[in-house]
Image 1 (spheres, rainbow, N blue to C red):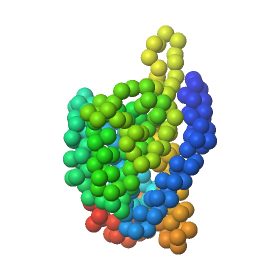
Image 2 (image 1 turned 180 degrees about the horizontal axis):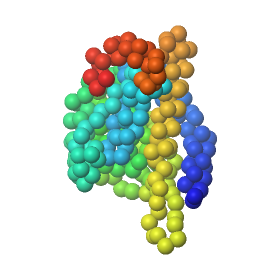
Image 3 (image 1 turned 120 degrees about the vertical axis):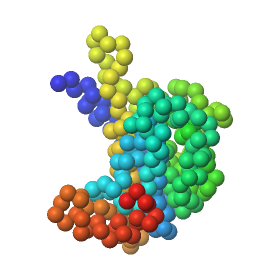
Amino acid sequence: MNKDYLNSLRRLLDRLEETQENAVDRVSDICAGRVARGGLMYFFGTGHSHMICEEPFYRAGGLACVYPILETDLMLHEGASKSSFYERLPGLGGAVIDNSPLGENDVLFLISNSGRNAVIVDAALRAKEKGAFTVAITSINHSSSVTSRHPGGKRLFEVCDCVLDNGGVPGDACVTLEGLSQPIAPTSTVLDTALVNLVAIGTAQKLLEKGIVPPVFLSANTDQGDKANKSIIEEYKRRIPLL
């Protein structure tokens, strides 16, 4: 087994721990404050980044106050090339946000490793206009190495209220094999998922400090899961129809 990938992930996770603690704590504090006031944690990403939107949703050990914005035209199962085409269209990101119930009490996480495409930047700008707190989950290394495809010339990390930097290399893939010119094995999914779960833990801790028991799902594949989750689903389904 080639262990270069595991070693790269260990190094990047160590870097994440060393550099992102303050940002994770800040975002967790803001999430807890807004959830305590009735807000939700929204997640939006295109292409492979939509997987990060599904990671915290209806998840064993995950918070119930999570609203994934899943637009099928921007997801790979409706066509990979089509997804790439649509994520570059100016104006579409704002329309996606306007078609959601996102408001001033909410937090929107925007996931894009490059942060360069029009849809994700437009979504961030429109969310800020609506009063939501915006959080970029991105690679500043990658994003700083490319130009913006947004008409305004900005990348995601330049327009959001806070940035969670996964620290990944430009191009995402991290392993070089002899005889292959293209690096293999991307890191962003592992790192982004770690950041999302660190924020979830921090949010739960800060809610408990406020005397609020956070709504956390038990695995539906345990004998007690369905019963434990029933009241949580009933409480949130009217606000999160995907439940």
